[in-house]
Image (cartoon, rainbow, N blue to C red):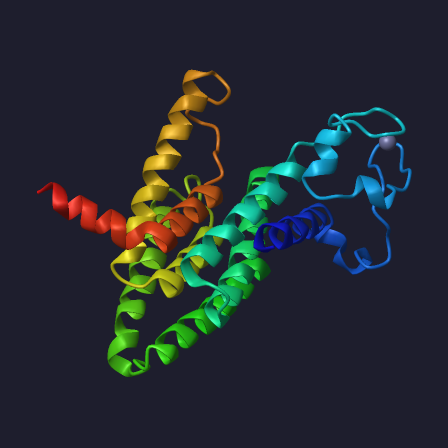
Length: 251
Ligand SMILES: [Zn+2]
């Protein structure tokens, strides 16, 4: 049920990514083929499955459908399953599902447009604050002392990314990534936010090198970093403690 719900939400996120700049029309316009403008029938709107049933082509004009659709839907379903596995059906899980959805939109939007809309980061920060509040409250440890690690985490992630933005004059990293760093700090706290940054930089460098080696990019090209920050955040969120224990277990 959680996976099916995730697929449905992912399908909606695709619409948000696509029509972000004309959000007001989402409720009015029925889903239609971008190429031939023909309205898509309900039986062709089944998240994830329809893409494969239709052979990645529009039923009417046979023009290709972007693989972004099944990827976003499948990814959202996978994330919802992970959240359910780790948090069950709780308020924390609900808040995380919202945050994960926002992070999916941020990643794909960043890949498509090389920028992260601030409004998405602010929304994420708002829900991350809610998540931490509920988390501390339900563990009856809502006090100044338990908030401090989150303060350090915000300073560490926001400060570090901000430092890279300044010394690279926004070439390696955009100002929008600082907001994303603040979101990460609030969501993960210390020391987990460091795991997230570590995973983000390792995966970002690896993919960057692979793209350069495959001559898809040169060293001067920009690779959007938002998706890697999001990847690091999710890995740290679900497996952060395990990774830290494993890491220190090596020594
Ligand atoms: Zn069409």
